Length: 143
Image 1: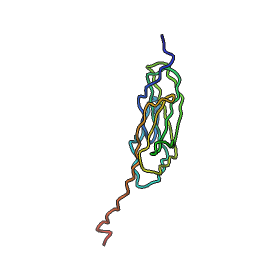
Image 2: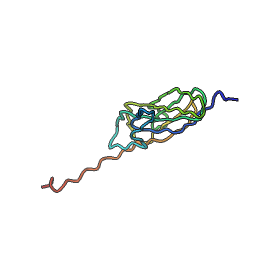
Image 3: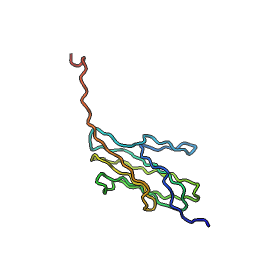
Image 4: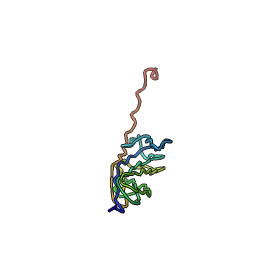
């Protein structure tokens, strides 16, 4: 008996600054992010990318990626991508690209990755404000 549909496993999900693809098909992730440290808010990220790879499934699916604000309810961005897996040994790689995201509050944002409305992963993305320290004047500037 061959199953007609098996929900896939999320092999990885990474937030990064950019995703490129080589001529041989391999992906290059640029600037993998675990947090955002800024001197002040608000700040606008020109582009954030979520790299997701699915495997061990069979069928047609919809991936949903959401960026959730620190209040845990406001969806700042959402992306949906349709993909299919013909065999459990195959994999699918998806890239969600979010442009012009304004972070106006410090705190822990969340990234959610779902497949057909089933949550597969939720991970934190802290936005931290670290004010710049005044630079001490050198001896030459004082003279």
